[in-house]
Length: 482
Length: 78
Image 1: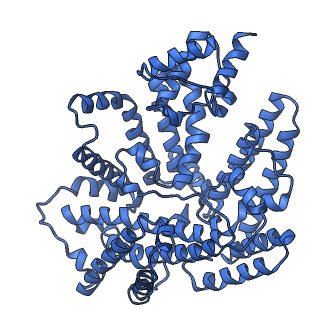
Image 2: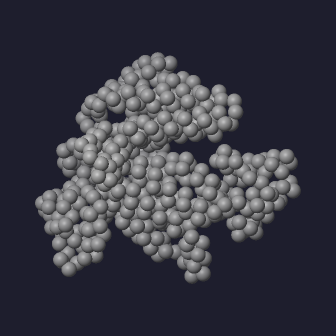
Image 3: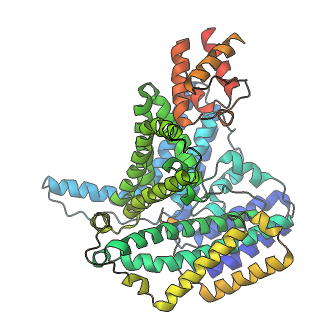
């Protein structure tokens, strides 16, 4: 059941009312049942089995890990639990790619094979809750948290519906105590939650889906375009994916807030980052923290004797995994490796860069900051090309033709949806900018403090914008596929 | 206290700042430039100075300088 469907807007208030009127002791049952129902609404029955399997396996290994007496036994339990989770993830997400690879190899060595590649399984949400399960086992092993004894709360930690399909990837230490806390009606949370849901929906159906029309017009048929069209479509994609994913996250955070639960904010103005490292502190924060804590840090420490080279290698491996996590395709892997490479290079040049800025006395100047934002944004967009392009050939065509203006700056794609649509896009972006500036970069608490007239004006303008300007043709959230 | 002074010297050298004065409560947020990249230099410098080796688990669970000092102390007094 996607957040941008009518069903969800009936489902959410019903779940809230059931949660509100039932006794505190069984509130977790309402949330767990609602989460399973939410997952079942995808009409893929085996997904429920996978979720339960991950929950039971991880719960059991967590308990066994805690009971283990020796360091060796604890380590065995940790790695067995992680292996079980990764095995499930491979079966669900990577089996078709693996089978295709094996068939390709056997053909290369001219083995006669008639085998067809395995069909892809629907794996919505799986990589998110498996990452949560792995972080839980690691945190129990590191004694950061105690293992959860109540299987109901543990299953709810993995399955809680606002973050089930696309994250945020939550830590057990942050979420389980909130799920167990006594619920008291909180007017501010209710108001903020509804506002965040509306704001997220606006970002998705008014902005992201509209930008998507232009991006698709170019990226689905790249060879017709060159120069400025490719550049603008790539920039448009950067904002489409941001609006899409941050819109989803706002709706997830808003939905959870109705139940007094604070989920992790995944975004913090990522395109104002002044370096790629800074970008990863602002983009998909719950995911970047995960890969930083559970892949990068252990590898960096393992290879610490090699100093900068060890750190650089750890960064490349970490972002290679990040690419694979998004899907078993060359585009995602190159996207991940590019980010790994950007960061690995910065390990070596950063000290010299700092010294240079100090010598030139431009450390805290606005133009250095503006330049750094510009460079970072373009580096990120360069990587987005591989992330979005239909295949590698398209990606290389875009890269090699983005500065090719011989064919002329053909911008027909901007008119591919009609002149009116272009005007609407401009209006929509303007409204987004106004509202965004008013609520100070999505700080909804400051919105609540505005005068009643200002609030009414914004809310009515907002509703009118959604009703008049939204793209009501249903499209999936981009991060649904990961 | 003597151990804290010795570790403080290492901090000053790694972060190139003669004004650093660590306490057991000091965290990465309190020292300018203490990020994941300089952290690895700090750890290697401490290991070399005291001829000790931290375990992965210790390295992943240090919350502040106090944890670091405790771990060094337990290794050099063995």
